Length: 154
Length: 154
Image (cartoon, rainbow over the protein chains, first blue to last red):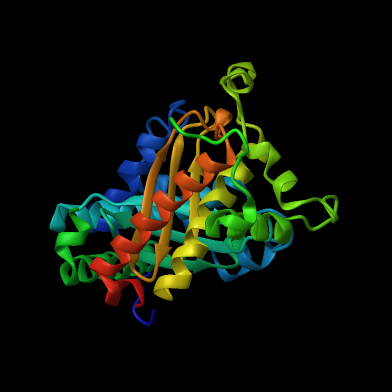
């Protein structure tokens, strides 16, 4: 992250961040975030080094943190779907210590798999960093689907 | 199930039931079932029509029922592994109403997928029926792996 701008990336300038914000808004069933700006919707995804250090990594991860981690990966699946037409389903397995596994499944293909650790501190130093990490996941999903498109669509 | 024998299938005569019992024993961490016969280990998997009707299908499924449903599918994965060499990881997503999805993932291949409903009443009329249903899952896993062995081993 050498060239993170002092003025952080605007949501409108990032396909990934737009997808993520749309999913957060869809998840906000009680409307407690009505009227929030796109940037404000991402506030809890941005953690400074100091924020991260303050979060204890014992016990169960905060359910809101788990939700954010899932929404991040759903946004990657959604962005990849727009290019590939493959809709992937998220499944997670999280142990009480914050370890686990997350997969995205499209048809018979596991289009993305990640072993989870340290979920308690899920977050990014900036919106630009969310975008960068998200686009990396999107690229991996697309590459995996392109290697076995028939299975992904089966 | 037209020819379920009055004397039900012995565990020793079924590859699938043997795998299932070995997993139940491994899961019995407190040793509360030490000394139980193989057949007794499967008692909770066998439900008569009347047993099934007595189980309410509202609210959360009993955690023990979910565990049995998972062990059943893990036994199928284990039996298939012995033929294919592919070790598959179980992941489940269960909503509070007892609906959900269960998958087995080997490498990048989703070797088995099942949409779940009515988990509350997971069970079989006899041990022979467990064996039959289990072998059906085993056959499906093996067929899926044989169609894309490289992905399953990746």
